[in-house]
Amino acid sequence: MPASSSATDTLLDILRDTVVSLVRREGPDLSARQLAVFLTCYLQDGNHTVRGLAAELHVSKPAITRALDRLGELELARRKVDPQDRRSVLVQRTLKGSALLRDLKHILTEAAAEAKKNGGHDDQPRKVANG
Image (tube, rainbow, N blue to C red):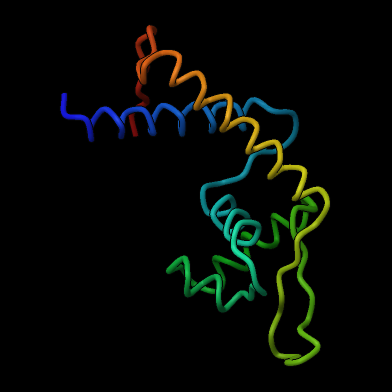
């Protein structure tokens, strides 16, 4: 197997193990879109707006709004009217969101360590869901 394929397989293992850990946690889990919005807001500096997130993620503004509605319900992000431009809405980080990011980093670190320990291959066969 070429090295790039092996590296990709390792990354996929890390992604899978991370997502599985997230869905096994207490409380609600995030959709891929919600997680993309969350990570963009928390990992990229600067002010984030609905319009800016929609452009960056190449999705519609209503899709961003729905994701932010859910993140708001979970207290992972909040919206605030931009005092400089009252037509614009800024997305703000929260303490609960920062805690989730810290947990996510820990989960990723553990998944990467496990992948490294296994040489990028799990000893157990993976079940692949249809669909």
